[in-house]
Image (tube, rainbow, N blue to C red; front, side, top):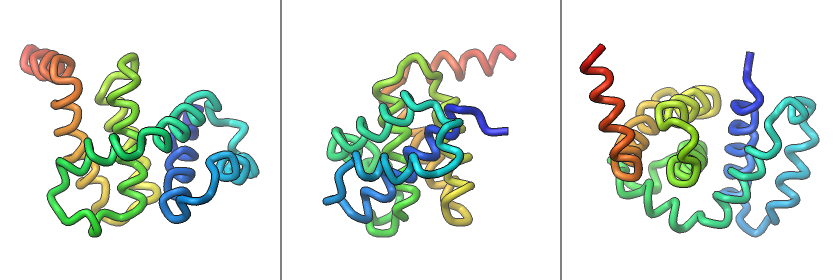
Length: 149
């Protein structure tokens, strides 16, 4: 069963994807369209809005952060992968209360749902590197805990 937070992230990714395909479309119309889905009521609305509007507000900065870690040409990154990466980059940089492994796992699972066959591997690789960059202390602490286990 999907959590309200997973649903919020899925709807946010769909909204970011829709915006990527039509950047002139206002975010409010994208949100209105997504709200028409019968499952939207089960999503964490605050998280959805925070991600959608946060990504669209900071898209250039977030794009620059994730694209540094691409191991392929930018035009080879699918719109779904890009939408997921932007969502996760926003959370990694602006939601320190959410552990980075949770953010990465959610991104991987959403990519498996909406993306291509191996898209989740690409997303995982990019986000592992981004997390090490923007949450270095947390990543290091996690690695040390794993060594002790």
